[in-house]
Image (cartoon, rainbow, N blue to C red; front, side, top):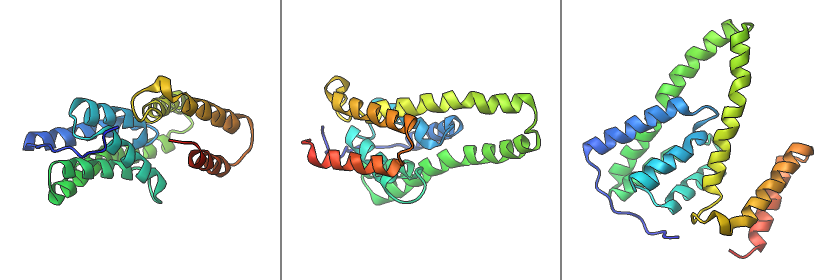
Amino acid sequence: MNDAPLHIVLSFADWVSLFGHYLLLSLMSIGGAVSTSTEMHRYLVVEQQWLTQAQFNHSMAIAQAAPGPNVLFVALMGWNVGLNAGSYTAAVAGVAVTMLGILIPSTTLTYCAARWGHKNRELLGVRAFKQGMAPVVVGLMISVGLILASPDGAAATDWPLWVISLVAGLIIWRTKVHLLWLLAAGALIGWFLPA
């Protein structure tokens, strides 16, 4: 896996495109911004090549490990895009563009929809919508797991990750073991297994 930073040049149109892409992702982010990270990966790493796979994975990992809201990975991706463009000013601009893009539409829509949904919570359509969104969120989270489980893009050689994920999922589903114990077990397994 190549950890070397990229050297890119971003025009004004590229910044507008990045902002617009995050505006659209914001409206798709049912279940949180992390549920759209598959599309972020496609856009930033595969299509535009503004981030490396390692930068993408590190942005996700750092933000998830840090205290605070998990949407911070969006800021880290913007920061890394800006750094790849060559300056700290561009990095700050990257944070502003991605965070405003991901927050403005979803926050506005959530506020308006929550007020309307609370006022009409007894309607059959509102209850059906809430129940119907659960499988959508689960599907989006599975797609995120698939992207993050193969850091080098070779899913077939990463079978231990798949086994551990399956076992952890079954334990969460079928027992009352607290999630923190599973996280601690995962940390120990990661510590002792060779990379």
